[in-house]
Length: 618
Image (cartoon, rainbow, N blue to C red; front, top):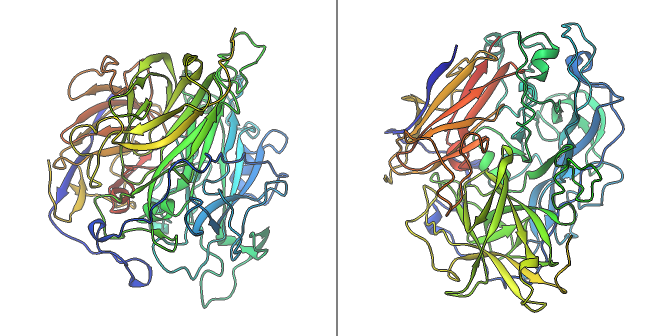
C-alpha cells in the first residue's frame, strides 16, 4: 500500500525569540552591522585539495551490537578522526585564522597543526576526504541469526575541541554523513535522547544509545573524571568515554539488508541508488551553522565497478571518467573576516548568514592550472545560506560563455549526462558533478585564464535577489589557467519568527512528526508557504525521487540553469523549494529502523529549529 503524507508545510508563526551565544556574548546583532572583510587579491593562491583519510588498525572496544551484528575485522575498514582547534591561512594576504577542523588520526597521515600551535598551515581547512567503494554483494538466503554483515567502515570520531571556548559555536559535536544510507545510531542525531524518549522508540536491533553528542575534554566540569580510553587527542591528552563515538557505515545498497535479515518478503534492491559525492559535517542541534562555519566539514567520494576511480580501468564496462588528479572536489563557501584574520559570524542573523569572501576548499578565490583534457569537478555548496548559479566563461563583460556536461548529482550518476549546460543552480548541501573539457580550446594560448563565476546576486539569507548579474560583474570563484598544448586523445517578511512544520512548532525532537513503516512506499508532499523565503530541504536515510514540482512532473528541458531532478534521470537527498513551491517526492525507507530527521539546510534556519523527527518502524 502506498502512503501519502503532507509531510512539510513551511510557514512562519508569529512569536519571536532571542538566543544568546556562549557566555551570552554576541559581537554583532545582524548581518547589516558587520564590517567588510579586509581586501584580498584574487587568484594568487593555488586551489588546495584535501588529503585522503588513511586506515588505522582495527579496534575492538566497540558497542556490543556492532560486534554482534555488523563488524568483521577481516573485511571492515577502520578510521579515526579528531575534531580539533587549529590555525590556518585562508589567503596569503590575511593573518592566520583559528578554526575548528577534522583531523586524520592515522599515524601515517600528513602532519597537521594541533591545538595551541602558532605555526599556520597554508591550507588545512577541510577535513580529510574519505574514499569508499561499493562492492558487489551476493545476496544469500535470509537468516535472522546470521554472522556479522562485515564490510563497510567504522569511523571513531573524537571531540578534542577546547572546552573553555568563547565566541560563536559550541564545542560539542555529532557527525552526519550527508547522503548516506546507514544506521540511525550513526546518522548524527542532533541531540541526546532521554530515557523517556528512548522508551518510545521501536525495538532497534542495532541499538540506539542515550548519548549521541560528543562532549569536549574535561566534561562534565566539577565532577569526578569519567572512564578514560586508550585514545589520545592531538595534544596527547587522554580521551574520556563521552568524548568519542563510533560510527559504522555498512556500504550496502538500499534493500540488501532487508533481504539478509529477513525483514522483506521480496527483494527491493537498488544498485542504481549509489551516491557519488557525499560530505560529512557537524549536526549539533541549534549550532550546526556556527560549528560547520568554523570548519567542521569534509568530503566523501564514492566509487564502484562502473565509476571505478580509474580512467584507465581495463574493465570495458567501466565509464572511464576522469580520475585523480583530474577528479577534483570543490566545496564552495562564503565567509567574513576581521582585520586580525579571525572569522566573523552573526549569531542573530536568523535569515541565514552571508559572507563577503568566496572560498573553494578553504582558499579565497584560488587558481588552478589545468591541462588540455577533461576534468571532473564535484561541486558542493557548503555555504550556510548562499545559493549559487555558476557559469563557465572567459570573465570578460559581454565575453564568451562555455558549456559543461552534468554527469551526477547528490543521488549519484544520472541515467544519462546532460550535455551543453550553460549554468547550474546549486543550493545549500546540494552536489553536482560537471565535466569540463579543456581540450576544446586549441586556439587559446598557454596561460589563458578562464573562470567559474557566480552570477546570482543575494543580499540576505532568505533567498537570492531577482535577476542575474552581467557576465564579468558576478563573483569569480575559481580561475583556470590553461597550460601546454592540447592533448591528442583517443514573498517577504522582516519579523523574527519561529518556524512551523505542518502548523506545529518545529524542533521537537522528542516526538516524531511521522512514523513511516519500513519498506512501505510513501509520497511526501513538501510545500513552502513561508512568504517568499527559499529553503533547501534535506531528508535523512534515503534518496528520494521527485514526482511533481508545483503540480507538474519536472523535466530537463529548462537547461539554463540545469537542475537535475527529473524522475528516471536523478535521485535527490536535498531539494530546493523557492517561495510558494511545492513538490511531491517518492520515498521508501528500507533496512534501518529508528529516529531520523529532515530539515532545511540553510544552516541558520536549521539551527532555529526548522527540523522535524520521523521514526522508521517495523
